[in-house]
Length: 285
Image (cartoon, helix red, strand yellow):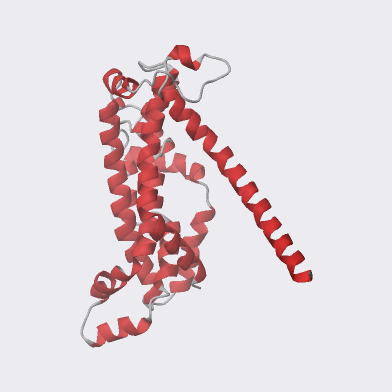
């Protein structure tokens, strides 16, 4: 009798927990559902009260018209340039730096790593003006360079920390055996460590893609004088602010949906590696 009562309480607790999680998930998905629904309506359908979640008729041509009425293709190309530099740079250079901190002994390594971690505490907005002055003096303003070159040089300390934690979990005997066979440190990093670190690299790839895909502030400030260099996030903002050609809400929602889709696809493809990489990196000391 006591055992049956205990099982009933456990089952009731699970039901309540799942009900809370489902309710939270629905609340989180409402803004996304509203964005997609609005992107498939006419302006008259958007003004209807109470609102209709499923438009009738469904205006699929909104997605075609938004490409015809605004330079979305140009913005998309600019975003892909920034994303490619960020993803490639973050994966290669950050993993190379992390390898040094995780598996190479040199004087002052731990102190240097702590100094690197301390930069995580400095808000980006604090560095914005000094960086702008530096970029302006070397002639980088109104070019892609401020949003691509630093990413190619291992700029992100969080990625270095994440990869270092993962690298420390790889058996050191593999590196020792490779050194005995005459392999260099570069060869160990490239041939042994990187192939064994796919979950962590997938996590860094997703983080880097997200950070660069919706990066708004840096392109807005560093490339303000070159409208032809605007990425998708800045282009969407200019339309919303009334300075563009598309003041209609359904077009804005269509463009917003197009910005969301790549992130959903990337996360869906790398979800298993992403969760595995973050989990393992957090467990290794």
